Amino acid sequence: MKWPASILFIIFLVFLLGSFRVNAQTESENPIEEEASGKHRLTILMANAFIPAADNIAGQSNMFIVPAWGINYDYWINDRIGFGVHNTLILQQYKIEKSREEIIIERSFPVVITGELLFIPMENLLLSAGAGRELEKQESFTVVNLGVEYGFELGKGLELSLNLLYDNKIDAYDSWMFGVGFSKFFSRTARKK
Image 1 (spheres, rainbow, N blue to C red):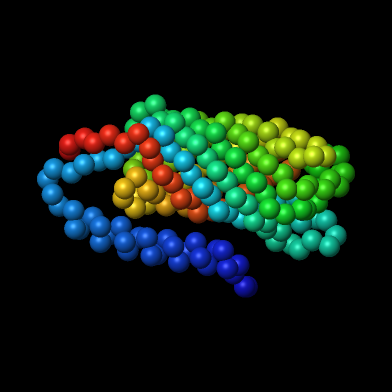
Image 2 (image 1 turned 45 degrees about the horizontal axis):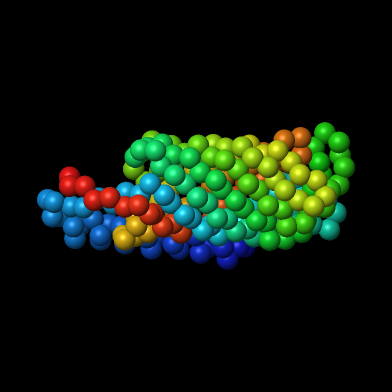
């Protein structure tokens, strides 16, 4: 089995950043630390979307994976709960078999816009749930989604995250997205521990 270059890159980043995080924790043993938190977060996401409904279409491969970009804005009410507007652009044309109707629909660079509820159950782990719309020139669909994100703090309000997102386009098709996000926090405040 040949692994796509993007998957190998993500695995490499996980190992690289995991070792960086261990080293960073051992160096900062100062009893008075500044904790940076931001009310606003802007994220750029590089991802690949797996679209199972495209597998049945003649001329498309069994593992139909398309590149995607995302830009997300999040506002945090407190340290654990936030709201966001997440936008994703699929960077390729593809055909899907619309569920229940067995009609082939061509999708041309669809854009997904969702409102998200964000929750942090434990350090570095973020869960999201949202709803919105997939916009495309031929036909648009209502979307509901669930997501998981694991973040690595890089300092100075920057974060790198690994993302997994499941989208359900109601009465149409599903997709899974795997990606790497680069975030910047704004409105930082300093607190003593």
